[in-house]
Length: 197
Image 1 (spheres, rainbow, N blue to C red):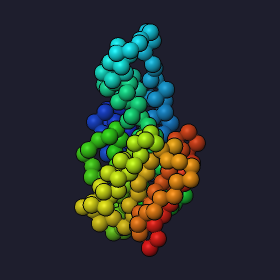
Image 2: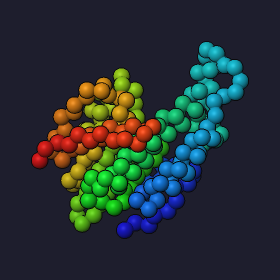
Image 3: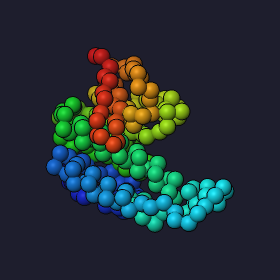
Image 4: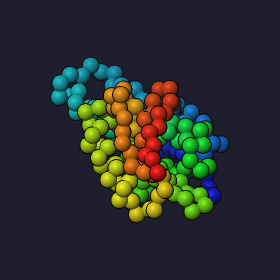
């Protein structure tokens, strides 16, 4: 089993893959949420182009991603929260035969997938995102393509996203071995849609 270590701010900034287990998920999520609470909106009154520049370009200086803008930090934080709550649910429900999940935070690209789990020759891979409803079709398409073309021979392929990215009646049609997880980052609730074998 891989060495489990705390997830530090510098890890997130560098998108270092980390291991989440049932013994550390609660404390790591709590630590992360504390970092998120440190994020503050710009205090000065801003309008128009100046507001846009600050949101997109000015370094935040706090939170899990202090070296990026508020806009970029918010994107990363929202996706990270999908990862945390999905893995917490996977571990609690024992939905798949894995006791630990290697995760990559912060839109990093050092790992082949956002989530990877291995045990007894079985492999799970997952792609994670948090998007607005209008961007869901494009993001879903690129995530499914990456999962289906993976170099890892995964038995389980998970597409994991925020639940409000889809309409309430959304019914995906996953292929065999594919699973769609819709995550509520406020409550931690997860809905899963699985393809039939």
